[in-house]
Image (tube, rainbow, N blue to C red; front, side, top):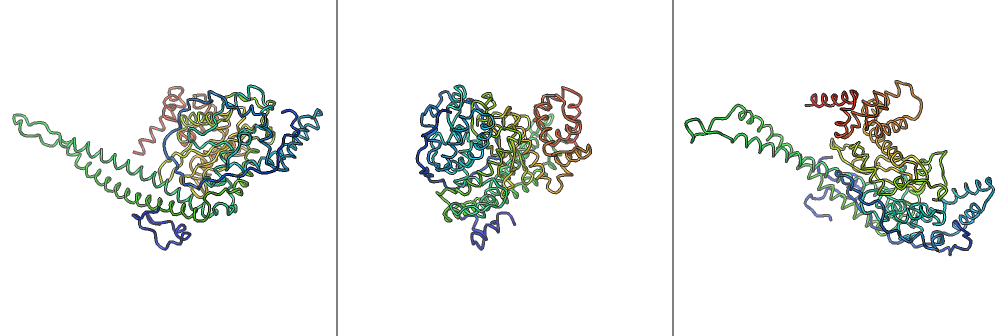
Length: 547
């Protein structure tokens, strides 16, 4: 497909025989008797699916305040539990009965049985709450989804105070989502469901085909914009280089004894003639490329607008896709199990008995952004992907799972419909022993999957994954290759970045080359030991050979 033409798949879907003109506009206690009736909470009107641009550069905002100064009063509401369960029908009644038996049980064996029943029934009950997330949730249901807080009396005074001071709105506009927010975005069609399998999307929203094409068009648009900006920067640099050479060329001193006569060109000035010719050729090529990229960008903008209008015409606007929420809920349930592990604590309700986190280790949005900033300060390419030889910074979606897990995971490195600029998806358990380690595990997972996808068929031979695979194979190590990598990535970020050598020499060399530290970290390390000094020198040698 030539530059600036409409994607044939989009054209076929829209029934467009020829691409539109580029200049055309397209525009805890006794809980008995607390449940209310079985009438459900009406889901509010969803928002129209929007094609949101991904910022391909920039940095994380500085978090100046991690907790609110004034706590909210939601956990002091005597009707909190009643509101949380009301409107959920028979499953809520069943869950309430099992919870009562669990809380009143004194025999350990009986308590264990009821505990297991709670885990199963809770998720079935929570699904009904999740389906209401695209509408307006009362605080008890919102905080049940967000934190797993079923009844404030299950928490101690300190825990209640802590959670009542967690900032509720997303004031930083970063892609970090609590579960209630995530299901809202899914249900209103702003974010695609996370499954990688082909799933039939309900007619209440838009078809999977249409959504996929829109995502693809958005990716092409965002990628084209990045290329356009990069090429424009290149041309501006060439223009500045030309100005410098012209200035040098026009500088003359008076001839001795003939002050009114200007001196001849010096040897250095004569060389600039050739340099100017070279710069002019590069400028001409850059301008030609810029013209092509501009056409491609304009066409991609039209494609996005056409597809967005088509989505609205199909009746997807203003409706909630409960089937999408249902599918996504199943994915989130499996992800929750993965972050906890087989031997972990799968009890889904936040209680004083199981909560042992320090405030800085609770995976709040503000703590997550702070940790992501720290990761990026050491590994500046952690959230970057290459598209058409241009490095784009694409921060993944971070989903905060209210559970007692210790490991973050990545289940999608990017959207299958938009490999260019779509966000990856990582999940972080909210109540882990160490937030930084849980987050590093997820980022390491993301790193591995992106590198593997980039190398494609040659992932066992080339690049980061190829070199690491060959090192593992040579040592005949048995186990999960990706888990080996994640464990080493955690050591790379926590130990090696501080000058403590914990990795094998060969692994250190692979990481240094393919997952380089920030330059400031490198400068610090080269003076720590000969090992890092040698790696630093290799960088200099490679830079010279590339010149």
